[in-house]
Length: 197
Image (cartoon, rainbow, N blue to C red; front, side, top):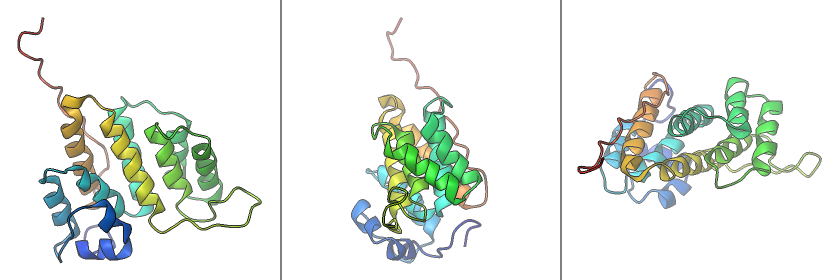
């Protein structure tokens, strides 16, 4: 088993999070979790590898990985939602979780960092407004929100770089799962088109 993973097979990821079978169009066998991630990355629908990485990593690690992806793709810019998600990773207490949830609730869902703040906010505790009847987040809520944020960031990148950002983000997730860092290495710039001035 890898340093940060609680699963010994890819099938266990799907058993823990039944929505993964809906989100990913290839079912795993009993291969190791990281082996299955690499299989997904080699397929035509490579976004499945991003989705799987969000389910595979534990909640805090998934949010941190998502933040690293969004920072790298966005040129290391951080807004209030991204900062709130990162604050929760550093201090996963109720106050930071609630702060992230509140920022996400008023955020723009067309912005990747909003989804990461939502992922942190849905990591535990109640997701209902303060003072309201408590409502627990679903077990897969953090993963679903992380994958939405990372996919949105990748999809909003420049088309020649889209595939390279998928690789960079998934490779960072795999390295992080194995005990390394989650830093996303920016892909090399696409070469200029021939005939360009």
